[in-house]
Amino acid sequence: MMDILMYLFETYIHSDAELMVDQDELEDELVRAGFHQKEIYKALNWLEELAALQESDGQSAITTNSTTSVRIYTNTEMHRIFMKCRGFLLFLEQVGVLTTETREMVIDRVMGIETSDFHLDDLKWIVLLVLFNVPGNENAYTQMEELLYTTETGILH
Image (cartoon, rainbow, N blue to C red; front, side):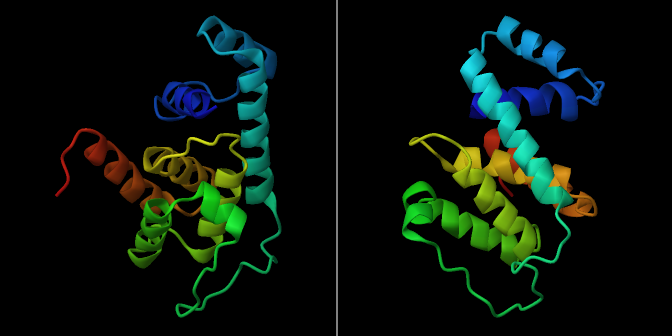
């Protein structure tokens, strides 16, 4: 499923291609690109759930301005989000890329990925997708994009 999400991001979002694509056309294109229908459905559903999170009214319990709060992960979350990934999320919060709310959106979307093989690179892509879909996070998105692409090419400064 991560391959489909990355493909969609690079094909439609990152390349500034036409974003208003019919879902049937999109599914056909993904099948032609070699993806399986079941995985396509899961990826599109994942994106719909991300949009639903973004459209929530902002009155959730995760909306807080406390800089001293600490996120305690459930056992289920710790089995999916390994220590290296949790440390990376904390780092992103500390440098201002993620807010408490966007962090929770990222965790929700990580838990929405149906895989037992989840890595730090997958997390970085999910963070990028979440930040892209939340208005007002343009600077954080740019920072994350630079972090993703510079570490992918091995250039970290």
